[in-house]
Length: 194
Image: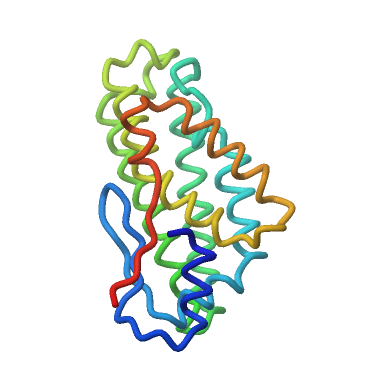
């Protein structure tokens, strides 16, 4: 199901126990009120997507042609920006709106894990990504960890939001660097347990 469909169901008196966001590396549970609250945060989501996804090329370009050092720095900046957003939102958002913090925390954790893997592979010591044997797999895993979260954030934007088409195009550009087999794994799935 798409996020917009989940929001519409959450507005009804339909009885259900859980709303889940499922992706390759796990799932997150949300309460009805938390899902409705996510739909109200489009301005915050827009800023996060712009700064941490669209402007951070490490998340979506074919990095095999990029400098591993540059890639590490870009992912590190993304993790730092996400951390700042999390800390800022933690003090401002009411408990019902904290689902966004969970999504950002999962994205930040994926960045931190990827940085550790890149450093363990000594990626920063090479000029070209193709010179680091493990780099393509590290980047593949990074996208599989982060793309479902990024797409979930894109789906939170209203259908007529001006950033929506650009964010969606950028997401598809990055997804195109994955194998056909991995493309489905890079998507999220919203479900309801009745």
